[in-house]
Image 1 (spheres, one colour):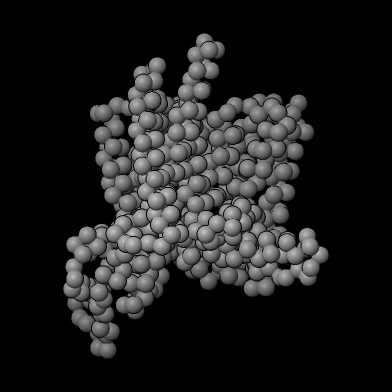
Image 2: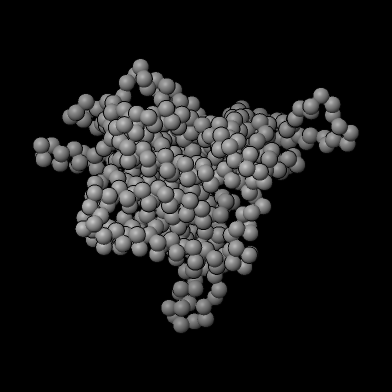
Length: 498
């Protein structure tokens, strides 16, 4: 039995390693090769660059120049420093930083796969992981770059705290505490996840907390210390602006009646709802009762991550922004998909045909989000004079999936003549006097794919650009071949794979 368990563990590790390579390769192949213009990512790159310059000046006993801090503080920027440093030596920091969200997303999916292997059959584990990787918002955000750090660390904290049993070693407990602390500190909103992290600590020590009370205090102290450092250093940015609450208050709801509608819209909004941009989550919601019976701890962890996120975002006037889909839902996708593996041990066609169908729909939607830079829609809205947050997040005219599909058709047809489109709205029966004229735009301007590989498929490139093109092309081949090997190894599992 021990040799069988060891074989299974080695087999899982081998397949997980190949899966990571395949996901990293496929993701990287469609990368834009840049992070500029993607939310606060460039802000963190600039801050990290200045941190390196200041540190270098300090080491050489020169005058230390000031650092411009980013909104989430220096803690998340520490994860950027290796990429920025390498980027200063190879090509540019902007290019090397584009590898980071790809790496983090591939790592997130690999952790999900390893956890699912402990909950359900190898085949179902692989199906759910690929559904998450290519049928949800995880794929577009491998290029957008926002949310990936926090999502990775909260899932890693859950994996360490729940999937690997009791942590006995000192190094293991320190690592667990650091990962939990970072999951609360990598974003300003991370503190909202404290109930999920507290539950992980509770599960670790609930059976023997009395003889291990020193370990409980040590882990709790590490988590609190990391969070306090993050909160204190974030004040470097928010302090001069009057504090974070002053900045966020104008975006909060004015009536408690909005809270319920916001919570429902977070999932069900036809323009920005989580069910639209990650359809497989519908199956996860359905699976929760069965998951609670089979694996209570993993399910409660997923519910806490999701519930805390929804509870916080529902106090905001807008639960989303101009970025692709329900951005803040990104952190809950992988935990929720655990519920499916926790509910059902094996794949069943009669039951899981719905899962396959929703994953296929999600694949189309996620592909459109990965194919285009999310800023294309914002530019289109700006050029038509309709870039209000209300319209972008709630108007069906500005539905990102529909617009991205329209842009894809324009690109595919490659029309030599203008493709004019008007952001037309329907007046409620009578057009008011002095109403604005809806502006028309040529969609060809916005239909350019963000992938460096696709953009330059038929372009004569310089030496550096040619090398980047070959890198992306090779990564696609390696990624696809690795995925084929992963599928074959899964099918050859000793136990029934599905």
